[in-house]
Length: 506
Ligand code: NAI
Ligand code: MG
Image 1 (cartoon, rainbow, N blue to C red):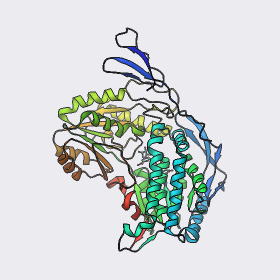
Image 2 (image 1 turned 90 degrees about the vertical axis):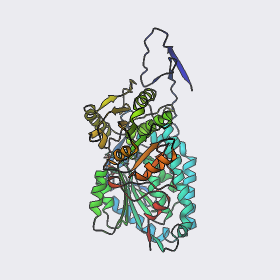
Image 3 (image 1 turned 30 degrees about the vertical axis):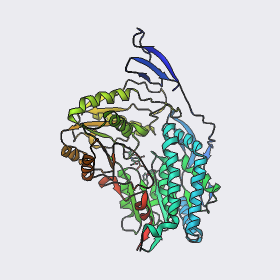
Image 4 (image 1 turned 45 degrees about the horizontal axis):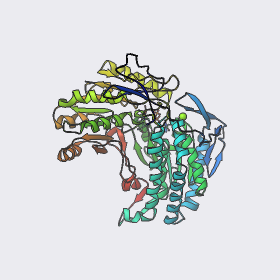
């Protein structure tokens, strides 16, 4: 750690909190600051303008419209990106249909696997480039894009490459076939990873794809198109069209799309479900959450605090399964809060490209405004805490914060903030913890912190959540199905369950 000592607490000088930095104080009162450790941007060549990727080629949008994508850590534009209209969407769906009919449904399963392996390997080779671009366009810390997003995206392609010629073993005795063209719409919180979650299972099961990335984070999906070209993936098998909600709406309602996969807000998920009701399109929806992290008095407390911190502040809280509610056993709540505050004081907020940064930029101005509004509401509902870290003067940043002693009915306990904002409640018995954890319109994930295995199993079996982690949080693996209950959506992604969403199984 390349630290720079500031002073010790015995010195009389007042500690100057550095701009865009965090002063860390050790137990004995020694204070230091991290030296800047920025990752170089030079590995990525950002083009001034990006076109649509249709039928294997970069294609200008018919109406000639473009929109800007911004670096949220500065608020400055990074590049401009084509806006696909209904005509462009139609061309992309036609290209996907043609590729399905003429090439992708004709080649062997083994060959499909070869393409997926190729894509996975090239993605690994170019991982650093993708990590830097993801952090620039999304605002997430480089240590996350480098260590989480990009390796997991590659892992999804590797995992699904292995399935292509083994689908009959996955569904023994059944007659299986691909669905055709998948129309996929993804959000901005894990741009490349969500693209991989959608594209890899589609290709493995023999479907072709038209995918729309989020309007604030289109660049890594467009860079992935270069990998498709490098891997010589047949033209039209994957098409990437950029644009905002209107582009997404024309994609999911296109008459020649057989399968719709969406990740994003519950509000848009409902719109999509009603837009395609009455058609024979298959659909999976991956929506929001208000997931509980339950900390029992017998938990390893420091690990639990770390797990709660990672669970909500990781990726600026832009995580559908973020542990945004901590439920803490009353007997340990005081010491838990003390440790939580101390740990939050050490979190480093700032330049996403700095390798020491824990919390990067909020993805957009709109999202930052939404977070600020909800935090204001929360201030009348619970005891507010935020560390005294200073935020960078430019860009969209928000301090990590929590509300203690909030009621289950409080807005801050019920509404998805999608930012680094935690609400804390206490409980006295395991039953009360289960009731409180399940008291939400969502049901995506939950965490349990306890050293007692029997308690973990008992509580986990009663939680209405698609994923339950024990003594860890936010761990993902391509082999494990992911998805929610209630307003968190339906269908599963990953594992065998995820394959079935892209197959006709008779
Ligand atoms: P959003 O749901 O509007 O955006 C997600 C994707 O859907 C984007 O690609 C967008 O262009 C597209 N889209 C928007 N309207 C559409 C429509 N009518 N038909 C088809 N596609 C459409 O999410 P937004 O506005 O960016 O964020 C709002 C809130 O949603 C956040 O504050 C957060 O609470 C939640 N959210 C949840 C996510 C999750 O992973 N569960 C991801 C992103 C946002
Ligand atoms: Mg952007």
